Length: 66
Image 1: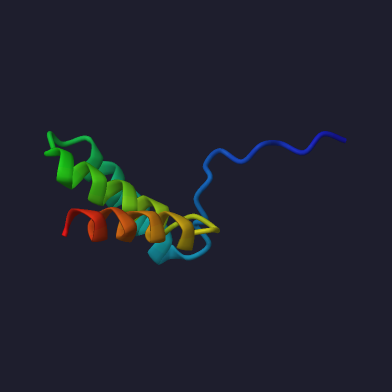
Image 2: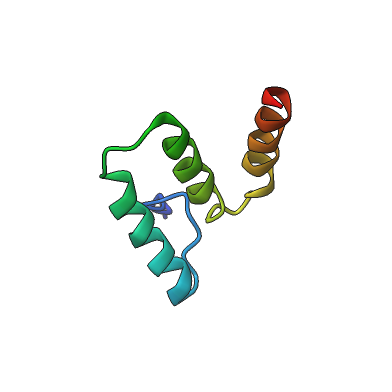
């Protein structure tokens, strides 16, 4: 039996996760600056199973900038 692929890589176990995901979808459709796009990408990553890796990479980029 073939296991279907998930429709998203995000973990949406709770109603709050689902609300956050929908809000991020709405925001990502807006015209955003590059900085805001990076922030949205980070926020999406917090819904992933392995959210620590993207967070660490984001922080590393900030450290390099400052």
